[in-house]
Image (cartoon, rainbow, N blue to C red; front, top):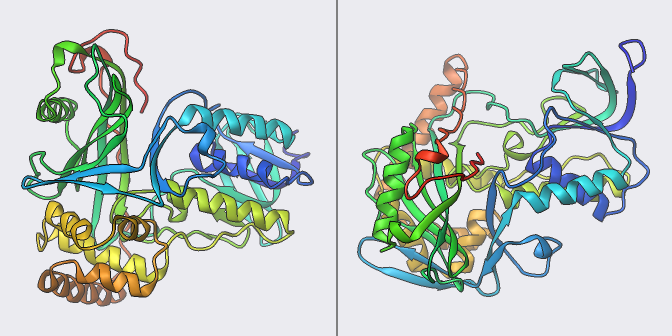
Length: 422
């Protein structure tokens, strides 16, 4: 394959992370066997480099891959701790290793061509897409599905980051409750501008992911994340002398009302965060990413263009913009905002709302749970800001910074040999 002899395919997948892996598995699940497929990614994904947590109904094709799932979760604030029964939903944890393994098996069954190089240019003439790779090769595709991280089309009215660090902790004795996850624990010290919380995802009574997360405009330092995690560990009453850090996870996810165009050109479709799968008000991504993969695979199996539905309804994106503004301007406090949602609605409704699958009537109930005057002020401010955006030149969006990576030998508590996924 040279510049004079491009590889002709029906479908080119750019990127090989979570969105592309879920798509390969969905194509295999829906028995799409008559397409020529190329996967263009500079990295062969394998092993545990990230963890996804999500909620949904049991009984899906993901069940065999789960590390753990829980029917009960806890939401804690400085004034109370609430245990929520999620029936008929469940909260689940999925590590990346099984997802990558399934995708690799699907790739073999689909007889896809793997190009281990970055896609450097993508040119769409409306009938075919020409992809030039970093090793000098060329792919000519009927459709391109692009899941590579991309900035939004323009700056948002509010731009925050969900940034976090988690320790996979192994304990000398039983200290975790494997029947219950901690979904959000707002007893952590709150930042001057933003929201922080901890959570606990137990795999067994001796092994769990304990994580500190912030929603805020700026990242912490390496030492700042470790200090926050050590503080949350102590808040949970865990003795560091009996704990070992087996792995460390770090991440940064954009939280912004800026637009992520899912269809930048006629035959290029973006998936994952670049395709709008990240919920602006929470940073949750996995469920929308899974829906996108399934919709694309169903469309291709039926001979239709591989274009998924919008990740979230337009009205949800508007509500997210208002909520982000209210939080950013200090009109509402993060712990109070989420506490009122879970206090005044069934847990299932709140979780389905965060996934973007509630009805308008349910959304009215959700909105009635919030503090009225600050949300009215945020709505008016958002409307005024939208008008200003139309009258002034488009501003470029700031780049999403890379995650702050820790030295595993310096992580608290304990040290020694812990792998460090990001």
